Length: 260
Length: 291
Image (cartoon, rainbow over all chains, first blue to last red; front, side, top):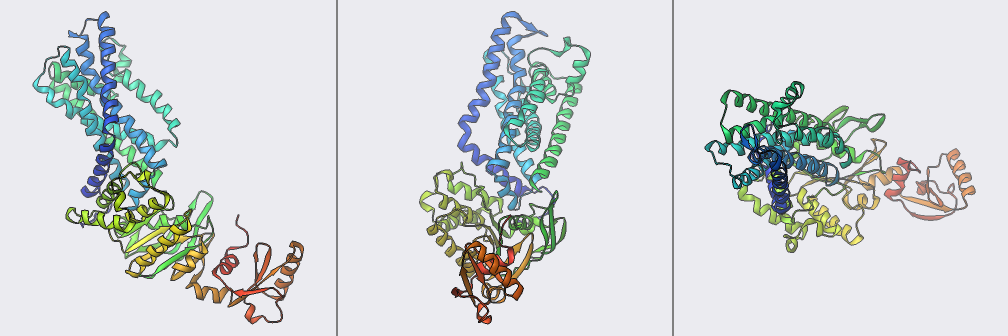
């Protein structure tokens, strides 16, 4: 048995949390993957074909390619935040497996870290799906696109942690209405996914700077249509900051819920 | 545990609890619902933080070193918290990792736990498809997967059929016989009487009596007791008179039980004479009525 260091996030505990997630995923990968891939692809096709008839190019990019790159962020957001919100509440309140994990040598920060990492990686991989569809509509593969899954993982970790924070603030699934309508929907719509923010009023553009999803959208587009190193460093930093803050909030509130 | 206090808002769940569990025994926490048994268990795993008092588990100070204590403890909660969607073997394998059993030994540990739960033939089935008794055995096997030095069993047989209770009782005695310390909470008196080497009777968050079941019976109920059956009115009358005479009694549903009957000859009214039980002690010490 490895040495224990109380009060620290320890690798063996993270590995155990990760293996639990992986084991559960092996049972549910079909439904989870179906939802995570089909939904953004349908959104992409609907917007691409629908609006594509009205708008041929945005910022010099064919509209379906514009949306296709933007929808990567949407896929990451939905996969990460919804899984973590609903799963965390289920595991805390209904199945109570968190109780069992906390009775073993696993702490709250290790659960939050392990699960956010797992869901982040998964979301990052699912996020590639819209890009693959966009290839079918003429998007040209670029070397920089290999960075897209990494951007997705970083974004996904933040949103998974955000979902765990949300889950720690509610007692029933109903409570999620506030977060879904009040936070997730605005984040999803005002991220530059479906329309460029450059034509929006200044106040809205400033507000979008606070939207982690906006930074993800920008990074993915830059991977596809040309990197802008100075701006991209800022975008990556913003995503890192978001992930750290969301992680801190998730640990803080989950601990308050689980350790009474 | 020394002077342990735990409040939830205005409610004092644990109120100056003193508890010392000797190694290698089966120790019973006996008390009515709401006496603070489950809270005590959660304090021991660091899942509830005490408002006062000192706690030491296997030489580890809690709550600061609770992770070290948890590594050497197995916990079986009152209500199932199994990963019910997973297969039986996966449930055990996941927790073998949580308890950091290194990979060469993990497979053996899982096999051993499967055998202990008697679920070898169901290893591939999802836990949700198991019967209630099987799920409870799986829960206990999961708590034992890392061969802990102490096992905490919170109401291990609540809501189970008598046959399954017997089965679990033999399992618990077997554990104790192998040298594992068992701390078991229960509100079934029979369970404590049969299994526990020592019992602490808990009421309103504190230990009101402690000892082996036979010591407790001798001290608090005597060797023999007499049950007197009568109408409600006559019972209150008898009770008032007994109190005035200094005779200890307790309510037993439609009867009044006179305790220590062997040493009160002549002063106890006629009734059914029987051996004193732990139930007599329990009701005397925790009150006739549960709120």
